[in-house]
Image (cartoon, rainbow, N blue to C red; front, side):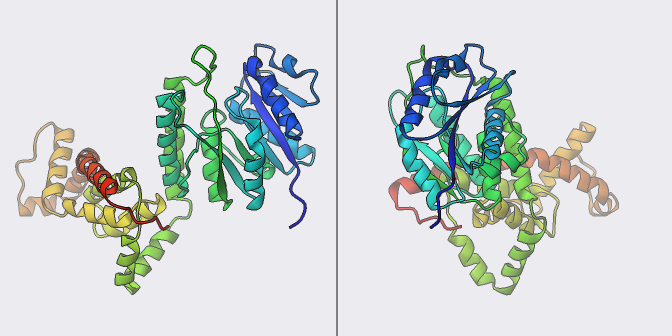
Length: 387
């Protein structure tokens, strides 16, 4: 193995003057060169490290953590660094854990390394645990990586990924987006355990704004899920179709080996029901297989659940719902001749009604599926996941 890549520690800071110095001194103590990127702080953060041998970069206006990291990556590239180590300036991370994280990254280089925070302590806010689990779930859908901590800011990146990549987000969503896009680019994502410290509420400074930032995260995940579906149009669909036609038994065996968490299996069920309710005959099964493949969901669960939408009951309910939404009344003049003569109108009503009936029916089936799978997993040993 050749020389390890040159690494620069990058610390983005925004109004964390009280904790910044301890973080920087810890990194210097580990022997890393350090760049502090001040993202428009108003508390004189850079003054706290003015006497330390560190590089500094200041953004005059606050642009978000992602913007600070991108600026740091460009500065690192300009100086010939090939890797950056990032950690937050709020004192949550322990610089002493950095060597293990760096070693994990360099063992699989080029790779992204993520520090998995131990969040089982009594001082960890419940909202942080939920946020991490929620983010992990969506990242798995978007790129297929089953990661333990997609919100950790303690990471190692290849400089080129950040400096030359294209990213939509600049704030809290950035660190999720960079994982997904890194996985799409074929980079390994490795993990290493790290410690975490949550200061008491009066000492903890958080810039997360629940409504605004959750709205941004929702928009980002919507974009990433959609992008995941259509990154390579046609190829996965064609592959699944060939597998099903050439060797149906092998295809079903492969589907049966796919496993996921209770939430993932419940999502597969609900999505299968929704897609099955749409007027996409005769391509329904292929569409369901394609969508579940792209979102890394259990295809067998989705295909099986979609059978509840077999004609005529669910399509008829969808047509009735669509007719009600369009005309304010139920469709009562139906007969065979009228159905054939007004087929385009009925298909439109079916599609409109399915957008209401499909999600509702999917949720009604996904909810018991979630609890049944969870109960099964708690009483028996789950099979390993294969992707």
